Image 1 (tube, one colour):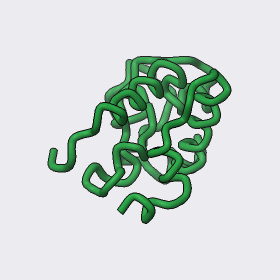
Image 2 (image 1 turned 90 degrees about the vertical axis):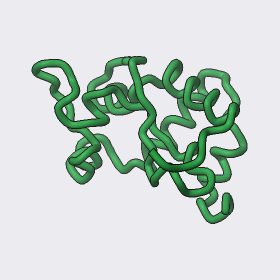
Image 3 (image 1 turned 45 degrees about the vertical axis):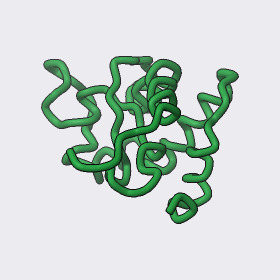
Image 4 (image 1 turned 90 degrees about the horizontal axis):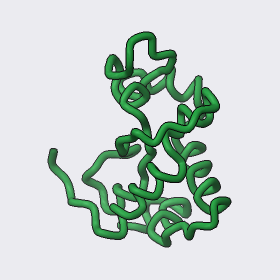
Amino acid sequence: MKGRNPTAEQKRWHDLLSQVVGCIACREGHGEFNDHCSIHHVDSRTKPGAHWYVLPLCAGHHQDGTGPAGFPGVAVHPLKARFEEQYGSQSDLLSRCAQIIAEQGHDVPAGFLAWLDGPEVMA
């Protein structure tokens, strides 16, 4: 896949999201903690700073048809509208991830906070 590689700091952010938040859709939509996550890029992988604008999602919430048999969730790919209807907008989920990280006593990286101020700040 084309795009910039994540920096070491961005990789640490991805790990923190997966380990502390877990799949945000499982957590918010089903009340379950699932740390078997992949990183979903909300707005491509190629824009400057795009590796900050990510959500931790389990396989079933990330790609349709990849969850276990009988998986009750909705995947963001290719069902973005249904996913957001069920779990909330991706922007709201990003904010919720940062809130959970902070509540657990971890620092939210400046790079992510710049995204909250607007992606144009990262350009």
